[in-house]
Length: 437
Image (cartoon, rainbow, N blue to C red; front, top):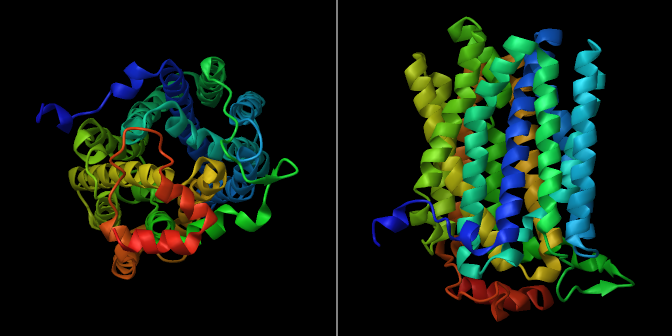
Protein backbone atom coordinates (compact mmCIF):
# COMPACT_ATOMS: atom_id res chain seq x y z
CA UNK A 1 0.00 0.00 0.00
CA UNK A 2 2.83 2.38 0.84
CA UNK A 3 4.24 2.00 -2.67
CA UNK A 4 0.86 2.35 -4.37
CA UNK A 5 0.11 5.79 -2.96
CA UNK A 6 3.11 7.19 -4.76
CA UNK A 7 1.39 6.71 -8.08
CA UNK A 8 -1.65 8.26 -9.73
CA UNK A 9 -4.84 7.91 -7.67
CA UNK A 10 -7.58 6.73 -10.06
CA UNK A 11 -10.40 6.40 -7.53
CA UNK A 12 -12.39 9.34 -9.00
CA UNK A 13 -12.65 7.60 -12.38
CA UNK A 14 -14.01 4.46 -10.73
CA UNK A 15 -16.35 6.06 -8.21
CA UNK A 16 -18.20 8.63 -10.35
CA UNK A 17 -19.61 8.05 -13.85
CA UNK A 18 -20.30 11.79 -14.20
CA UNK A 19 -16.71 12.70 -13.32
CA UNK A 20 -15.41 10.03 -15.70
CA UNK A 21 -17.47 11.48 -18.56
CA UNK A 22 -16.34 15.01 -17.67
CA UNK A 23 -12.73 13.88 -17.59
CA UNK A 24 -12.95 12.28 -21.04
CA UNK A 25 -14.47 15.42 -22.54
CA UNK A 26 -11.92 17.66 -20.86
CA UNK A 27 -9.07 15.47 -22.11
CA UNK A 28 -10.38 15.73 -25.68
CA UNK A 29 -10.76 19.50 -25.40
CA UNK A 30 -7.26 19.86 -23.97
CA UNK A 31 -5.77 17.86 -26.84
CA UNK A 32 -7.56 20.05 -29.37
CA UNK A 33 -6.41 23.17 -27.58
CA UNK A 34 -2.77 22.12 -27.76
CA UNK A 35 -3.08 21.34 -31.46
CA UNK A 36 -4.63 24.75 -32.06
CA UNK A 37 -1.93 26.47 -29.96
CA UNK A 38 0.82 25.20 -32.26
CA UNK A 39 -1.24 26.08 -35.35
CA UNK A 40 -1.87 29.63 -34.15
CA UNK A 41 1.79 30.10 -33.16
CA UNK A 42 2.91 28.83 -36.57
CA UNK A 43 0.40 30.96 -38.48
CA UNK A 44 1.15 34.18 -36.60
CA UNK A 45 4.92 33.62 -36.85
CA UNK A 46 4.56 32.99 -40.57
CA UNK A 47 2.54 36.19 -41.03
CA UNK A 48 4.61 38.48 -38.78
CA UNK A 49 8.01 36.90 -38.07
CA UNK A 50 8.04 38.86 -34.80
CA UNK A 51 8.02 37.90 -31.09
CA UNK A 52 5.63 40.81 -30.56
CA UNK A 53 3.24 39.06 -32.93
CA UNK A 54 3.41 35.75 -31.06
CA UNK A 55 3.17 37.66 -27.78
CA UNK A 56 -0.03 39.28 -29.05
CA UNK A 57 -1.61 35.82 -29.00
CA UNK A 58 -1.28 35.97 -25.23
CA UNK A 59 -2.90 39.39 -25.15
CA UNK A 60 -5.79 38.27 -27.37
CA UNK A 61 -6.33 35.30 -25.09
CA UNK A 62 -5.64 36.93 -21.73
CA UNK A 63 -7.90 39.98 -21.91
CA UNK A 64 -11.10 38.04 -22.69
CA UNK A 65 -10.21 35.63 -19.91
CA UNK A 66 -10.07 38.44 -17.39
CA UNK A 67 -13.35 40.06 -18.43
CA UNK A 68 -15.43 36.96 -19.09
CA UNK A 69 -13.85 34.88 -16.35
CA UNK A 70 -15.07 37.31 -13.69
CA UNK A 71 -18.51 37.45 -15.29
CA UNK A 72 -18.62 33.67 -15.42
CA UNK A 73 -17.96 33.49 -11.68
CA UNK A 74 -21.04 35.59 -10.90
CA UNK A 75 -23.16 33.48 -13.25
CA UNK A 76 -21.90 30.24 -11.71
CA UNK A 77 -23.20 31.31 -8.30
CA UNK A 78 -26.63 32.29 -9.65
CA UNK A 79 -27.78 29.64 -12.15
CA UNK A 80 -27.29 25.98 -13.02
CA UNK A 81 -23.58 25.51 -13.62
CA UNK A 82 -24.14 22.61 -16.01
CA UNK A 83 -26.19 24.85 -18.32
CA UNK A 84 -23.41 27.47 -18.36
CA UNK A 85 -20.76 24.93 -19.32
CA UNK A 86 -22.93 23.43 -22.06
CA UNK A 87 -23.59 26.83 -23.64
CA UNK A 88 -19.99 28.01 -23.48
CA UNK A 89 -18.65 24.71 -24.83
CA UNK A 90 -20.99 25.13 -27.81
CA UNK A 91 -19.46 28.59 -28.31
CA UNK A 92 -15.99 27.05 -28.35
CA UNK A 93 -17.13 24.65 -31.08
CA UNK A 94 -18.17 27.64 -33.20
CA UNK A 95 -14.86 29.44 -32.58
CA UNK A 96 -12.91 26.32 -33.58
CA UNK A 97 -14.97 26.05 -36.76
CA UNK A 98 -14.17 29.70 -37.50
CA UNK A 99 -10.44 29.07 -37.17
CA UNK A 100 -10.72 26.18 -39.60
CA UNK A 101 -12.70 28.31 -42.06
CA UNK A 102 -10.19 31.19 -42.04
CA UNK A 103 -7.33 28.78 -42.68
CA UNK A 104 -9.18 27.18 -45.57
CA UNK A 105 -9.83 30.65 -47.01
CA UNK A 106 -6.10 31.46 -46.89
CA UNK A 107 -6.52 34.32 -44.41
CA UNK A 108 -3.50 36.63 -44.14
CA UNK A 109 -5.10 39.09 -41.73
CA UNK A 110 -3.66 38.66 -38.22
CA UNK A 111 -6.47 40.65 -36.48
CA UNK A 112 -9.07 38.24 -37.91
CA UNK A 113 -7.11 35.27 -36.59
CA UNK A 114 -6.66 36.87 -33.16
CA UNK A 115 -10.35 37.79 -33.02
CA UNK A 116 -11.30 34.13 -33.41
CA UNK A 117 -8.73 33.16 -30.78
CA UNK A 118 -10.26 35.78 -28.47
CA UNK A 119 -13.78 34.41 -29.10
CA UNK A 120 -12.75 30.91 -28.10
CA UNK A 121 -10.95 32.26 -25.04
CA UNK A 122 -14.01 34.30 -24.02
CA UNK A 123 -16.30 31.26 -24.22
CA UNK A 124 -13.86 29.13 -22.28
CA UNK A 125 -13.43 31.80 -19.61
CA UNK A 126 -17.18 32.29 -19.20
CA UNK A 127 -17.66 28.59 -18.47
CA UNK A 128 -14.44 27.92 -16.56
CA UNK A 129 -15.57 29.03 -13.07
CA UNK A 130 -18.60 26.74 -13.25
CA UNK A 131 -16.49 23.88 -14.63
CA UNK A 132 -13.96 24.25 -11.81
CA UNK A 133 -16.68 23.57 -9.22
CA UNK A 134 -17.62 20.20 -10.73
CA UNK A 135 -15.00 17.91 -9.09
CA UNK A 136 -15.83 19.04 -5.56
CA UNK A 137 -19.55 18.45 -6.24
CA UNK A 138 -19.09 15.09 -7.95
CA UNK A 139 -16.45 13.56 -5.67
CA UNK A 140 -15.95 12.94 -1.92
CA UNK A 141 -13.66 15.44 -0.23
CA UNK A 142 -10.80 12.94 0.04
CA UNK A 143 -10.85 12.41 -3.75
CA UNK A 144 -10.96 16.05 -4.88
CA UNK A 145 -7.19 16.49 -5.12
CA UNK A 146 -6.93 13.15 -6.92
CA UNK A 147 -9.58 14.29 -9.41
CA UNK A 148 -7.66 17.49 -10.07
CA UNK A 149 -4.47 15.48 -10.51
CA UNK A 150 -6.17 13.27 -13.10
CA UNK A 151 -7.35 16.35 -14.99
CA UNK A 152 -3.87 17.79 -14.91
CA UNK A 153 -2.34 14.53 -16.15
CA UNK A 154 -4.71 14.55 -19.13
CA UNK A 155 -3.61 18.12 -19.83
CA UNK A 156 0.04 17.15 -19.68
CA UNK A 157 -0.59 14.19 -21.99
CA UNK A 158 -2.27 16.63 -24.37
CA UNK A 159 0.77 18.91 -24.13
CA UNK A 160 2.99 15.97 -24.97
CA UNK A 161 0.98 14.55 -27.84
CA UNK A 162 -0.80 17.66 -29.09
CA UNK A 163 2.22 19.59 -30.46
CA UNK A 164 3.63 16.48 -32.14
CA UNK A 165 0.25 15.68 -33.69
CA UNK A 166 -0.12 19.31 -34.76
CA UNK A 167 3.25 19.18 -36.48
CA UNK A 168 2.24 16.05 -38.38
CA UNK A 169 -1.13 17.50 -39.40
CA UNK A 170 0.37 20.80 -40.54
CA UNK A 171 3.20 19.10 -42.43
CA UNK A 172 0.83 16.69 -44.21
CA UNK A 173 -2.36 18.74 -44.73
CA UNK A 174 -1.43 22.29 -43.63
CA UNK A 175 -3.16 24.51 -41.06
CA UNK A 176 -6.82 23.67 -41.85
CA UNK A 177 -6.29 20.07 -40.70
CA UNK A 178 -4.98 21.19 -37.31
CA UNK A 179 -7.90 23.56 -36.78
CA UNK A 180 -10.35 20.86 -37.92
CA UNK A 181 -8.92 18.51 -35.28
CA UNK A 182 -9.63 21.14 -32.63
CA UNK A 183 -13.23 21.45 -33.86
CA UNK A 184 -13.76 17.69 -33.60
CA UNK A 185 -12.38 17.51 -30.05
CA UNK A 186 -14.59 20.44 -29.06
CA UNK A 187 -17.63 18.47 -30.22
CA UNK A 188 -16.48 15.50 -28.10
CA UNK A 189 -16.21 17.82 -25.11
CA UNK A 190 -19.77 19.05 -25.69
CA UNK A 191 -21.15 15.50 -25.92
CA UNK A 192 -19.40 14.51 -22.68
CA UNK A 193 -21.62 16.90 -20.72
CA UNK A 194 -24.73 14.79 -21.36
CA UNK A 195 -24.27 12.64 -18.26
CA UNK A 196 -23.67 15.50 -15.84
CA UNK A 197 -26.40 16.14 -13.24
CA UNK A 198 -27.92 19.59 -12.79
CA UNK A 199 -25.72 21.62 -10.43
CA UNK A 200 -27.31 24.70 -9.00
CA UNK A 201 -25.29 26.48 -6.29
CA UNK A 202 -25.95 25.11 -2.82
CA UNK A 203 -26.98 27.65 -0.19
CA UNK A 204 -26.40 30.59 -2.53
CA UNK A 205 -26.55 33.99 -0.85
CA UNK A 206 -28.54 35.81 -3.48
CA UNK A 207 -30.79 38.80 -3.86
CA UNK A 208 -33.45 38.51 -6.57
CA UNK A 209 -31.71 35.43 -8.03
CA UNK A 210 -28.36 37.23 -8.34
CA UNK A 211 -25.26 36.94 -6.16
CA UNK A 212 -24.90 39.77 -3.66
CA UNK A 213 -22.27 42.09 -5.19
CA UNK A 214 -20.84 43.07 -1.81
CA UNK A 215 -19.58 39.53 -1.44
CA UNK A 216 -17.56 39.23 -4.61
CA UNK A 217 -14.93 36.55 -5.09
CA UNK A 218 -11.98 38.94 -4.92
CA UNK A 219 -13.18 40.42 -1.63
CA UNK A 220 -13.56 36.98 -0.07
CA UNK A 221 -10.16 35.87 -1.36
CA UNK A 222 -8.43 38.98 0.00
CA UNK A 223 -9.87 38.39 3.47
CA UNK A 224 -8.44 34.87 3.75
CA UNK A 225 -4.62 34.58 3.85
CA UNK A 226 -4.65 31.02 2.52
CA UNK A 227 -6.63 32.05 -0.54
CA UNK A 228 -4.86 35.27 -1.48
CA UNK A 229 -1.48 33.69 -0.76
CA UNK A 230 -2.18 30.72 -3.00
CA UNK A 231 -3.48 32.92 -5.82
CA UNK A 232 -0.61 35.41 -5.46
CA UNK A 233 1.87 32.55 -5.69
CA UNK A 234 0.41 31.42 -8.99
CA UNK A 235 0.22 34.96 -10.38
CA UNK A 236 3.88 35.58 -9.50
CA UNK A 237 4.97 32.41 -11.28
CA UNK A 238 2.98 32.87 -14.47
CA UNK A 239 2.98 36.62 -15.04
CA UNK A 240 6.73 36.91 -14.57
CA UNK A 241 8.08 33.72 -16.10
CA UNK A 242 5.78 32.29 -18.80
CA UNK A 243 8.05 31.15 -21.68
CA UNK A 244 5.82 29.88 -24.52
CA UNK A 245 5.81 33.07 -26.62
CA UNK A 246 9.62 32.96 -26.62
CA UNK A 247 9.89 29.39 -27.90
CA UNK A 248 9.93 30.33 -31.62
CA UNK A 249 12.65 32.96 -31.05
CA UNK A 250 14.82 30.66 -28.91
CA UNK A 251 14.36 27.92 -31.50
CA UNK A 252 15.49 30.23 -34.29
CA UNK A 253 18.46 31.62 -32.33
CA UNK A 254 19.88 28.33 -31.11
CA UNK A 255 18.42 25.50 -33.18
CA UNK A 256 18.07 26.93 -36.72
CA UNK A 257 14.29 27.27 -36.48
CA UNK A 258 13.70 23.52 -36.80
CA UNK A 259 9.93 22.97 -36.34
CA UNK A 260 10.62 19.61 -34.70
CA UNK A 261 12.58 21.37 -31.96
CA UNK A 262 9.72 23.81 -31.39
CA UNK A 263 7.44 20.85 -30.76
CA UNK A 264 10.03 19.30 -28.43
CA UNK A 265 9.98 22.41 -26.22
CA UNK A 266 6.27 21.97 -25.52
CA UNK A 267 6.62 18.21 -25.25
CA UNK A 268 9.43 18.52 -22.69
CA UNK A 269 7.18 20.56 -20.42
CA UNK A 270 4.55 17.85 -20.81
CA UNK A 271 6.99 15.03 -20.02
CA UNK A 272 7.83 16.69 -16.73
CA UNK A 273 4.16 17.29 -16.00
CA UNK A 274 3.17 13.71 -16.79
CA UNK A 275 5.96 12.33 -14.63
CA UNK A 276 4.85 14.47 -11.70
CA UNK A 277 1.22 13.53 -12.36
CA UNK A 278 1.92 9.80 -12.38
CA UNK A 279 3.64 10.21 -9.01
CA UNK A 280 0.97 12.58 -7.71
CA UNK A 281 -0.30 10.15 -5.06
CA UNK A 282 2.36 11.52 -2.72
CA UNK A 283 1.08 15.07 -3.33
CA UNK A 284 -2.69 14.46 -3.25
CA UNK A 285 -2.38 12.71 0.13
CA UNK A 286 0.02 15.25 1.62
CA UNK A 287 -1.69 17.67 3.99
CA UNK A 288 0.83 20.57 3.89
CA UNK A 289 -0.31 21.61 0.41
CA UNK A 290 0.41 25.31 0.96
CA UNK A 291 4.07 24.64 1.57
CA UNK A 292 4.19 22.23 -1.36
CA UNK A 293 2.69 24.84 -3.70
CA UNK A 294 5.21 27.48 -2.64
CA UNK A 295 8.16 25.15 -3.21
CA UNK A 296 6.84 24.04 -6.60
CA UNK A 297 6.22 27.61 -7.82
CA UNK A 298 9.75 28.66 -6.82
CA UNK A 299 11.19 25.65 -8.64
CA UNK A 300 9.23 26.63 -11.78
CA UNK A 301 10.88 30.06 -11.87
CA UNK A 302 14.40 28.73 -11.33
CA UNK A 303 13.96 26.04 -13.98
CA UNK A 304 12.86 28.59 -16.59
CA UNK A 305 15.81 30.80 -15.74
CA UNK A 306 17.95 27.75 -16.41
CA UNK A 307 16.23 27.27 -19.77
CA UNK A 308 17.21 30.81 -20.69
CA UNK A 309 20.87 29.98 -20.07
CA UNK A 310 20.89 26.47 -21.55
CA UNK A 311 22.83 26.12 -24.81
CA UNK A 312 22.72 22.36 -25.57
CA UNK A 313 19.33 20.98 -26.54
CA UNK A 314 19.42 18.30 -23.83
CA UNK A 315 19.94 20.95 -21.12
CA UNK A 316 17.14 23.13 -22.48
CA UNK A 317 14.73 20.20 -22.59
CA UNK A 318 15.77 19.10 -19.09
CA UNK A 319 15.02 22.53 -17.64
CA UNK A 320 11.63 22.58 -19.34
CA UNK A 321 10.83 19.11 -17.98
CA UNK A 322 11.63 20.26 -14.43
CA UNK A 323 9.44 23.33 -14.99
CA UNK A 324 6.59 21.13 -16.21
CA UNK A 325 6.81 18.88 -13.16
CA UNK A 326 6.81 21.87 -10.81
CA UNK A 327 3.85 23.39 -12.62
CA UNK A 328 1.79 20.20 -12.22
CA UNK A 329 2.42 20.08 -8.48
CA UNK A 330 1.61 23.77 -8.10
CA UNK A 331 -1.63 23.54 -10.11
CA UNK A 332 -2.95 20.48 -8.25
CA UNK A 333 -2.20 21.84 -4.79
CA UNK A 334 -3.59 25.30 -5.57
CA UNK A 335 -6.77 23.93 -7.10
CA UNK A 336 -7.50 21.63 -4.18
CA UNK A 337 -6.75 24.31 -1.58
CA UNK A 338 -9.04 26.87 -3.23
CA UNK A 339 -11.97 24.44 -3.46
CA UNK A 340 -11.53 23.21 0.10
CA UNK A 341 -11.39 26.73 1.50
CA UNK A 342 -14.50 28.04 -0.29
CA UNK A 343 -18.18 27.26 0.49
CA UNK A 344 -20.25 26.14 -2.48
CA UNK A 345 -22.36 29.32 -2.61
CA UNK A 346 -19.18 31.28 -3.40
CA UNK A 347 -17.20 28.73 -5.39
CA UNK A 348 -18.20 30.26 -8.73
CA UNK A 349 -16.85 33.69 -7.84
CA UNK A 350 -13.71 32.40 -6.14
CA UNK A 351 -13.15 30.02 -9.05
CA UNK A 352 -13.47 32.94 -11.48
CA UNK A 353 -10.66 34.75 -9.67
CA UNK A 354 -8.59 31.56 -9.73
CA UNK A 355 -9.33 31.10 -13.43
CA UNK A 356 -8.37 34.67 -14.33
CA UNK A 357 -5.07 34.31 -12.49
CA UNK A 358 -4.37 30.73 -13.54
CA UNK A 359 -5.16 31.16 -17.23
CA UNK A 360 -5.00 34.85 -18.09
CA UNK A 361 -1.82 35.21 -16.02
CA UNK A 362 0.18 32.92 -18.32
CA UNK A 363 -1.20 34.60 -21.44
CA UNK A 364 -0.34 38.07 -20.18
CA UNK A 365 3.00 36.65 -19.06
CA UNK A 366 3.62 35.49 -22.62
CA UNK A 367 2.88 38.98 -23.87
CA UNK A 368 5.27 40.45 -21.28
CA UNK A 369 7.99 38.01 -22.31
CA UNK A 370 7.56 38.69 -26.03
CA UNK A 371 7.60 42.44 -25.52
CA UNK A 372 10.72 42.34 -23.33
CA UNK A 373 12.51 40.00 -25.75
CA UNK A 374 11.78 42.37 -28.64
CA UNK A 375 13.81 45.15 -26.97
CA UNK A 376 16.45 42.93 -25.30
CA UNK A 377 16.78 39.22 -26.10
CA UNK A 378 14.98 35.95 -25.42
CA UNK A 379 17.62 34.68 -22.93
CA UNK A 380 17.48 37.96 -20.99
CA UNK A 381 13.68 37.83 -20.83
CA UNK A 382 13.74 34.22 -19.67
CA UNK A 383 16.44 34.57 -17.03
CA UNK A 384 15.16 37.80 -15.49
CA UNK A 385 11.59 36.53 -15.59
CA UNK A 386 12.41 33.21 -13.94
CA UNK A 387 14.50 34.77 -11.18
CA UNK A 388 11.88 37.48 -10.57
CA UNK A 389 9.19 34.81 -10.24
CA UNK A 390 11.23 32.82 -7.72
CA UNK A 391 11.90 35.95 -5.64
CA UNK A 392 8.22 36.96 -5.73
CA UNK A 393 7.17 33.49 -4.53
CA UNK A 394 9.72 33.70 -1.72
CA UNK A 395 8.23 37.06 -0.70
CA UNK A 396 4.72 35.55 -0.55
CA UNK A 397 6.03 32.67 1.55
CA UNK A 398 7.76 35.03 3.97
CA UNK A 399 4.66 37.22 4.37
CA UNK A 400 2.03 34.47 4.64
CA UNK A 401 2.47 32.14 7.60
CA UNK A 402 -1.09 30.70 7.35
CA UNK A 403 -0.38 29.48 3.81
CA UNK A 404 2.91 27.89 4.87
CA UNK A 405 1.17 26.10 7.73
CA UNK A 406 -2.06 25.16 5.93
CA UNK A 407 -3.27 21.59 6.35
CA UNK A 408 -5.98 20.05 4.19
CA UNK A 409 -9.27 18.83 5.72
CA UNK A 410 -9.11 15.24 6.88
CA UNK A 411 -12.86 14.59 6.50
CA UNK A 412 -14.11 12.29 3.76
CA UNK A 413 -17.55 13.87 3.78
CA UNK A 414 -18.75 17.01 2.01
CA UNK A 415 -16.10 19.65 1.33
CA UNK A 416 -17.96 22.52 2.99
CA UNK A 417 -16.86 21.97 6.58
CA UNK A 418 -18.06 24.45 9.25
CA UNK A 419 -14.79 26.37 9.34
CA UNK A 420 -14.97 26.96 5.59
CA UNK A 421 -18.64 27.93 5.64
CA UNK A 422 -17.92 30.52 8.31
CA UNK A 423 -15.40 32.17 5.99
CA UNK A 424 -18.13 33.73 3.86
CA UNK A 425 -20.29 34.94 6.72
CA UNK A 426 -17.51 36.12 9.01
CA UNK A 427 -14.17 36.67 7.21
CA UNK A 428 -12.51 38.01 10.35
CA UNK A 429 -13.27 34.81 12.29
CA UNK A 430 -12.10 32.73 9.35
CA UNK A 431 -8.79 34.61 9.28
CA UNK A 432 -8.27 33.84 12.95
CA UNK A 433 -9.08 30.17 12.40
CA UNK A 434 -6.66 29.99 9.49
CA UNK A 435 -3.86 31.63 11.46
CA UNK A 436 -4.38 29.12 14.29
CA UNK A 437 -3.67 26.08 12.06
